[in-house]
Amino acid sequence: MSVRNLIKTSLNASGLYSVRRWIAGPKSRRLIILMYHDFTPEVDALPINRLMTGQPTAHDFEAHLQVITNHWRPMLLADAVAELDATGTLAEDTVAVTIDDGYSSVATIAAPLLTKYNVPATVFLITDWIDGNCELWWLDLARLMMNRDWSTTRPAELARILPVDLVDRIPPYRNGDRWQRVTFGIIDEFLRDLPDETIARILNRLDNVLPQPESAISRDVCSEPLSWEQIRALPDLISLAPHTACHSNLSWLPPESGMETINASRERIRQQTGRVDPGFAYPYGNDVDGYRTYGSHLAKNDYQYAVVGRPGPSFPETDRFLLGRTTLSATTHHALIERELSLNLLKSCR
Ligand SMILES: [Zn+2]
Image (cartoon, rainbow, N blue to C red; front, side):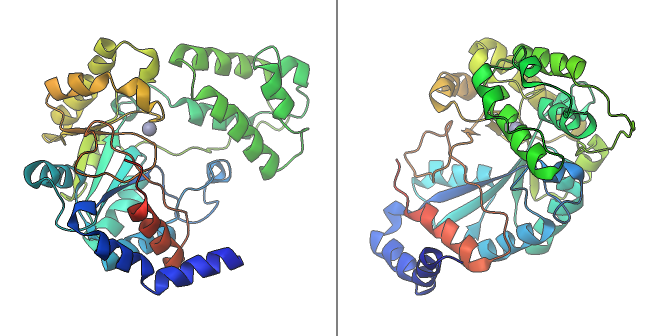
C-alpha cells in the first residue's frame, strides 16, 4: 500500500469521515448506487476475465457486502427512491446494489451472496440477449481477440478498418495476455461510442481480415447470459428491470425508438417472470446530457427512476432519471472498500 493510501485509510479508520458526515446533518444523507456487471469465481477463471479488467471475484463481492452491511443501510434502489420521494430525505446513508446486463454469474455467484448477507439488488436485463436473439458486441470482440491470429495482421490492414490514430496506439504484437488486454481495451473504448450498425460493420470486417490460427482451437472464452429459468429462480430480494432489448446506444436513437426498445425489454421481463421493477438503466450510461430528453418519456411510461454509468451519490434533489452509479474496486481489502464508500458520501457534485 502506498503512503498516501495508508494515510487515507488510517484517517478513515479514525472515524474522521463519519464525524464530518454527522456534523453535516440529515440534509446531506446520500444514496450510493453501486454498479456491477459480471462476476468471476476466481481471477482468470475464464480466459475472458484476462481481457475484462476489474471484474470482482466471489471473494471481492463478499467483502463488498460485508462492508456495506457493517457500515451502511443496504436497500433496494426502487425502495430508496420511493423513500426519497415520500419523505424528501433518507433515514440513513444508504447503499443500493445494481447489476447490469444479466450475466449467468448473477445466479451462480451474486445471488447466493446477496441472500447470505440479506442485501437486495436490482438486475437490469438485456432481454434479447437472454432470448438468444442478439449477441453483445464486446463478447464478439473478445472472441476475435482470443481465437484469431493477430500476429500476421499488419497495422496497415487494421487502419483500413479502424482510425489510424487508434491503430497507432495498439502496441506491436506480442504473444500473451497483456497485449490482448491492452488491444482489447483500446478497441473496446473506441467502439462503445459508435452507433450499433457501425460497431457491427467494423467487427464484421475484423472477422474477415483476421486469420484463423493454425491450430484451430476454438476456446469458449465468453460469459453466458442468464436463462429465463435461472431468472425465475432468483430470490425475491433481487428485483428485475429493463436494460433495452439489445443494449442499444440511446445517444443515436430518437427517444420514441429508444422508448420502444426500453418498453419491449420491460414487457418481456413481465411476461417471463410476472414481476418487473419500476426502474431502467441506460446502456453504456455515459451520455448524461443526451439522456436528459428521456426523463419525461420515462415518467410518462410509468418508470420511477433511471440510472446512468457516471459516478456520484444521489441527494433528494437529484434528477430521478439521471441517478449516478459508483464502481468499487475489485478487492477484498475492507479498509479500502470502506474508504471508497466514505469518499463517495463526502462528494458533493450536485
Ligand atoms: Zn449494460
